Amino acid sequence: MSITNDIESVLVSEEELRKKVRELAAQLARDYEGKNPFFVGVLKGCFVFMADIMRDIDFYCDIDFMAVSSYGDQTTSTGAVKITKDLNRDIEGRHVVIIEDILDSGRTLSYLKKYLMNRKPASIRICTLLDKPSRRKAEIEAEYVGFSIEDAFVVGYGLDYAERYRNLPFIGILKPEYCKQTSED
Ligand code: IMP
Ligand code: MG
Image 1 (spheres, rainbow, N blue to C red):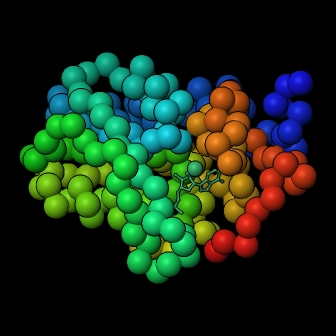
Image 2: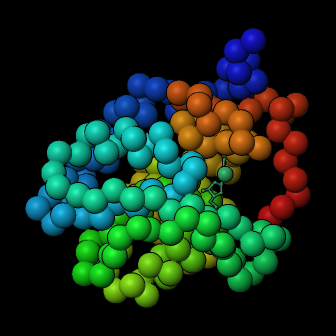
Image 3: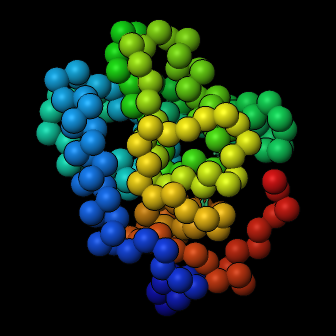
């Protein structure tokens, strides 16, 4: 049975994603072409977005990945995250662009940005496909945003619920019976 049956509604269709990814790539080209930027994807959620946007980019750049996981209780105010995979190359003096699937409370990216700042890059900006500004807990904004969305839990195009649905080609909202949200946050 198709996993699409678990979806209540499509929030962003494949066509809308394609168009928006091209627009974001054009913005990045305008700002970074000739600057040899260093793109950092945050695993695992970024993998589909990153693969698509990188193929719309036609200039020299580095591509690398980091993986992070929250330290136990996600509601702690420190928002400390554990780095489970770090970069393989030095970013000192480089223009870094973090590529994320979604900016929610902002704790992950706020931590990651400070963490990478210590390595003295020339600059750091954030490119996120989705943004939920109403959920923000940490003081952080993305310079490049695909879609600003309401507070709904979404899956697909890299985003998961309990590690499922990352492989859906669109972004959708799950039927309530498939997503038993915890009271977290
Ligand atoms: P933040 O630290 O709260 O901004 O967390 C961002 C991370 O939470 C993202 O990288 C996702 O892994 C996860 N996340 C937040 N909202 C959603 C959602 O609606 N669907 C799937 N994952 C989400
Ligand atoms: Mg996740």
